[in-house]
Length: 123
Ligand code: FES
Image (tube, rainbow, N blue to C red):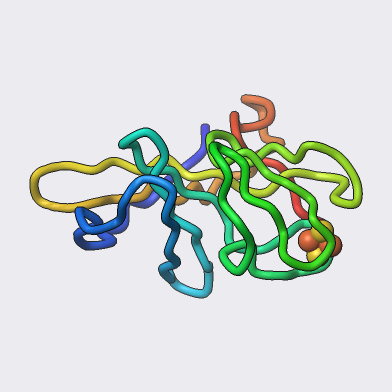
């Protein structure tokens, strides 16, 4: 079973639909966006060549890498095809009355429980 840590990210009530922002948890850069009123969080690093996806464009549930145009689904981190050859990590994010928390899994994604849903190795 994977272990996960919950981290407070603060208040994102001013993040409108179609907008994205970034935050840091330790040395991990996370892209947070809002689509149809719901927050999503994925790793802010393109799996193709280490480029911040937050510098790209959000269109619906897809964020496009600014460098070569690969797109990733913010709902699960899945990539739509080349030039990226894998997806990016996706994190559970919860928005409550007291703010937003994100869960960062620390366990082995290929452990005895099999791959974690929404987790794709980037290298
Ligand atoms: S660095 Fe993102 S598609 Fe190439």
